[in-house]
Amino acid sequence: MRYFSVKEMADKWNVSDNTVRNYCARKQIAGAIKEGRIWKIPENAQKPIFLRTKKENPRTLLSVLKEEKKRGYSGGIYHKTQIDLTYNSNHIEGSQLTHDQTRYIFETNTILAGNELVHVDDIIETVNHFRCVDLIIDHANDPLSESFIKKLHRILKAGTSDSKKDWFAVGKYKKVPNEVGGIETALPEEVSEKMKELLNRYHSVKEKTFEDILDFHVRFERIHPFQDGNGRVGRLILFKECLKYDIVPFIIDDPLKLFYYRGLKEWDFQKGYLIDTCLTAQDRYKTYLDYFRISYTK
Image (cartoon, rainbow, N blue to C red):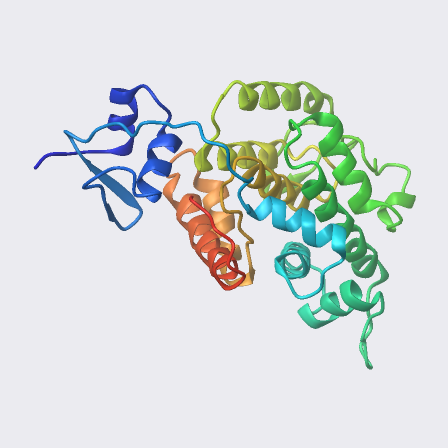
């Protein structure tokens, strides 16, 4: 028996790769088998017939996040996502708050510090990041735009010590050249045009894949449009776009940090570094979805 790949079958049936993957995941293709993360489809498989039926809206991750956020539900996937995404994304950027302290802030609007010194900016940016997560949930289905990206930055950095510096542009593109990991980024006068080009390129792809979203993230981080906060804004965008395209999102935690940075650096030469790192993080998030009984397809 000869088998076709997802892409080969998508070309044969004149549908998208994601459509074929969904057929496979829903067991609509007889004889399709999965080896690791790769689907193999019999060459003589018949294209599933689409029957338009009236049915209830599926209980997607996004719908659950919106519902639990609206109800103020504690202990669900919204609650866990807020704490884990905020803690890990801030921790990558040097925040000294612990996971428990982050949880206390979210749950009680207080902080358990003991005899420790706590940086006020860490607290402010934690509270602000919670607001950013709410924003990407509320606007997950909206097209990604410069104004939305700037709004994320404005919320994230509002009230911080950086916001009081006249050279630090909160919610606006950077005024002073900067670098990340010893690598030069776009100059301030180049940022606006490069961001427009990046968004146009991204929106030209009709059906976004996991790799398309990662590619946007890499290019965004290389532009580094803001004076600070680029990593956190970039990872918020990643999460939002995964929600929009019904792709299981992911959270980069401390054990994956160095692999994540290597993946960003090596993207042009070996995309597998970043893809594998993010798939590992995605598998961890899937365990949350399994626990809370939220279905997913990719």
